Length: 396
Ligand SMILES: *Cc1c(COP(=O)(O)O)cnc(C)c1O
Image (cartoon, rainbow, N blue to C red):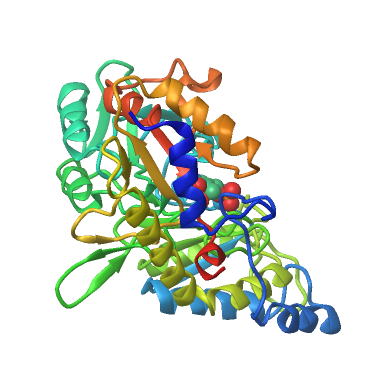
């Protein structure tokens, strides 16, 4: 069996780490060589730092061009984007929303923020996303249709949406998930918070993650592939949903040169202009970042190629991952001890490798919600480690 020391040694080679290297984080933002200073100066000089200004529209346009999503609505963070997306497709209090247990807590929280209830569906081992087979089986087992709506036989609640996640940037099996959802006429909101720059590949054209469901969401938190400091966005090809998203995220103010007239209870979910300016300077470099991240992933593959029990996780065939985080899988019988040792040793070397999240169904607030069997989620989550993945590590 490979030892922690050996594994850490190879990680150090892959990222060119020496004794006097400084701390190595999982994913560190980088502004060197960008227009960040110039664009933010424009906000400071003009005074447009807050909820009005031209950078928001510019940033939305750049995201739209890159992702191919017809409409993009920038908001204040990825959690808010999810909550607004779920609201827009009609998720209501006491509804159930089908989500995977292996995700950042925001995925479940956004459901709860609407008074709805997360309902966990197991994942599959290639992509860590919702398993289409588990989804189909679970629906066949517990769901029934009444007046075109889906209900849970056991709880009596309406099931109003499916919320797949593209975990660590690896595209999930979203087309197969979509087939199951179409059968039940369940709308999809895709959590693509980690997947800017990830695509499902098709001969001739590729589709960006977040563009398969009714609405997709992105996050631009500091640790994501691009950052606005804090921010998020909704992606949709549906004009009506896009207009409503803009309206409800901007206090439902009816456009008028001086009147304050609001026609709905709504939110202040706006992305400030100064954050959008930073975002514009970031998305301008997305292709270079993707290139560097793919190279870094290749290096890890190369240096772990001959270790039998250690696998660097790869995108599935018809997909293109942004490799936001490079994931190592420990294919040993009892991974717990080895994983803890690697975490301890790497932290001693100030290389901040991280395990994957605690499963959401194991958190106190989500331990009693409806759930299918979560065998694969448990199996995978204990054997995963995320490695330092900043694009600048490739360039160093
Ligand atoms: C980051 C993240 C979010 C939330 O985004 P914030 O901008 O931090 O609110 C949601 N889902 C997933 C999977 C994430 O990684």
